[in-house]
Image (cartoon, rainbow, N blue to C red; front, side):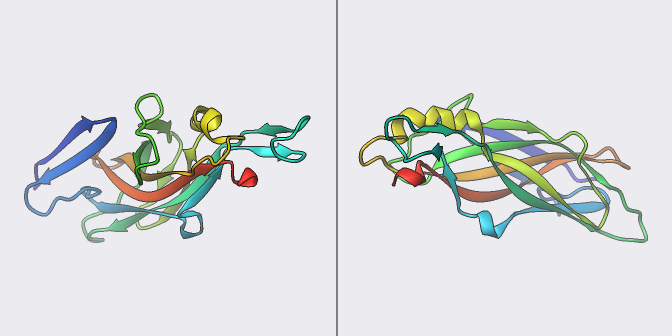
Length: 194
């Protein structure tokens, strides 16, 4: 027997909110044969996303910098519900990364900077197993967006965001689709120039 599940998305002030309403025992990440969870690498939470990797002394004549994406490994785990019923891998489809200001100094972000979608084609979580999935939580485009405000600016702040990573997946055997999420904190600044 399947339980009904309704997912409602609401966009308020540039922030994506997900409200999951379920009947019975169905929860977010609950599929026919497995339950899925995600956890961010604890050594990268919070993540200090350095906007500029400098060549030479930061912010001096002749010095240059490059921008590099920050990637965080998220462990996606699949737990088999009942081995006598069957098992099924989960095929990951995409991750949606949303940013919500963690303090009053950090500006709200709107599209195309939040939410950001990342394709996960080719990532399959084995039934009862785990998979490390690289997620770009501080992509080049977002770092470049903050650059003029935070690189080589006197007394520039550190922008802090609560980040929600929502995974969309399909259970291979049943075709059941659903989502599950994990959260972390990302701080953006030119840390070498602080």
